Structure formats: C-alpha cells, structure tokens
Image 1 (cartoon, rainbow, N blue to C red):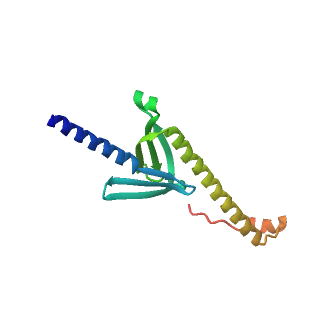
Image 2 (image 1 turned 180 degrees about the vertical axis):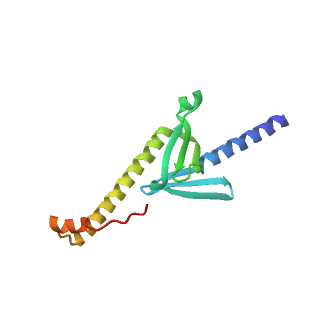
Image 3 (image 1 turned 90 degrees about the vertical axis):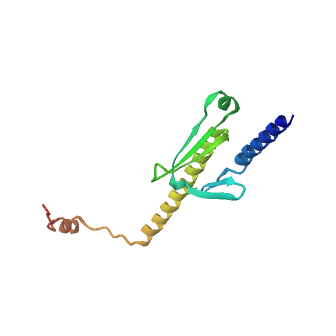
Length: 150
C-alpha cells in the first residue's frame, strides 16, 4: 500500500513538472520578431528576442506515430550569422502552422522595412539636384587617365 502511494506521488510530480515545462516555455511571435520565454525551474526564467531580420530559417519536425496522430512536434529557429545558434521548442502543437505563422510575420516585417527604406531613398534622391550633362562634357571625364597599379 505505501509503495502505491509513493508511486502515485512520484507520478503526480512528474505530470506537474511536465505541465510546468509545457506551460511556462513560450514563443511570442510579434510583428518585430520572436520573443522566447523559458522557465528553467520555479525560480529561474530567461527570455531572448530574435528580430525577423536575424532569422535564417524556421524548421518543424513531426516524429513518430503519436506526434503525427496528435500533431505535435519540434520547432527550430536558426539565427542568421551564427549557424550554431538555434532555438528549439519541443511538444509544439501544430508545428507546421507555427512555422508558417513565423514566416508570414517575417515576410510582412521585411516588406515593411524595404518599403520604409525605399521611401527614404526616394526622399533623399528628390533633395539632390541632378543636372544632366551633355555628351561633350561626359567625354571630358572619359579622357582622365586611369591609374594602373600593376
């Protein structure tokens, strides 16, 4: 009888720790990047932020019968510039949808950034006064001797 009680308590603790690990480890996908919050234990949490420009790739894996049947898997985020630096999250429900969501936000962020840079470039070019030069004036520049460093 006491052995059954001990096994029950140990089993409940294990289930509680699995729930804690699942519930307090999250990825928040925003329009600027992905914020990861990870709880190592009850008293230690850390977080990191990866901006969409710094994401090199998003990979999802679904392994085994149980993972395929329940649609659970592993989601991996690779940072640009450092191929060894990756963020992994296990037991992700619908990992393909999560991957598509991250990629969708990444594309929207990059499109917004390129649009802002394009508008800035247009404004700069409008402020510069370009005057066309004639072919005769352009030929003056062509007659300037070039330096040869061979």
